[in-house]
Image 1 (cartoon, one colour):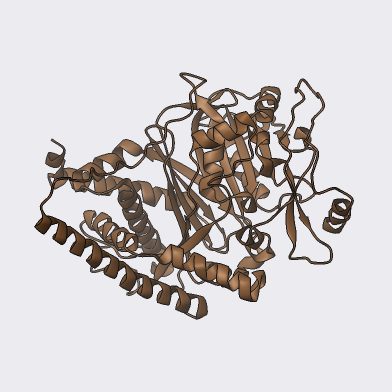
Image 2 (cartoon, one colour):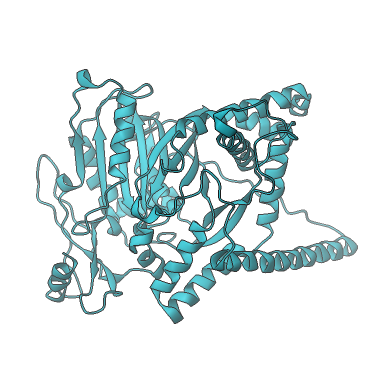
Length: 519
């Protein structure tokens, strides 16, 4: 298939004609900006290796049933204005490492899949949607078409009237880019002309008018911080290198099975918890939402593993000193950090509206960092958050992600994409978890005019047996786990442990009187 596309490519001129879609099924004709053939970035090529064939998935739960026609009409003027979503990935038959994005005509009917559902025959619509996504994860996107599709499932679940599953190959862009683009295709339900509002971190005001002595101390403080970052970076890069070479995480019940390459299917499930509860803990303990999310994750994983380690399935009352967990469990997450200057959703929306070729903040340009998870039971639940904060603060004082990006680019330049892919897979397979925490809109949004009750991103195809995504939306926090069922056969129990851990931490805040800090 790829050789046929390459043969067709040779007969085309380098300057491609604008894409035109004939009126079909009520969809207006539209023109795309002429875009020249563009080679895939080295990081994008990495995602086309069979060992790292990662697909991003975002499912949106809607308040009403969905008619396909309005969706097609909206996508023509939003998503299809982005060159990546109207481009084929073409491989040169003589040089298989030469991959290009080539603009093509697109037939929306080949990308929008309507799932016919007889709800009278469904025992559980929620289980039907879950199984549908699970079966979808067994497949890869067809490379003879642009690498994305949209699945519309009109089945009434507990929390929605319908579900939209948006699937994109990870070579089109990193997670930050793809979620930003998805949000740029939405509008506020209260005002369909306004884009979603994404909270941003407020910068501390820079003091002015300080004395020469204060200025000297500030300069010395910055120098000391820079030296600390250099030392931390050296330690982190060393740990990353030996992780790639031989340092594996402790073998636990949630580790990827030895034959993980033969089974890339993932069970993707989610749980909605209160974002206000996380903010309550955040404000009381003077930490960040990310600290609380990581803390409850460590607590939930500790509870879950303690149960899995129980002898003959017989659990006992567990305390910090008496439990089923082995000592010294090494369990880490291989995090991907987007190092490109990220385009805001306003930039992407303007790009699609105006049909411009701007791609600032788009693509795969990221580094890696290893984030250690402390697996242990704590009598004081607040210790989980304190430990998480210490871990995150330490990682903030390091250039690890930038250093690993430079290392990856040097590997690709001098040794080729195969070696770089091998190194990347080692980093993920020798760690245990993938973990992300993404900030979402503060108000209700609609996708193609349909109000969204929640949305949740995830992925499949990664070597890790467990991926954990936190996604905020209005006053909700959606926890999504993508698991290899050979390692984690009961993902809903894991979500129960996350939810229970948040309740324990919240109750501990109240019991210890930290709620006074909020007054």
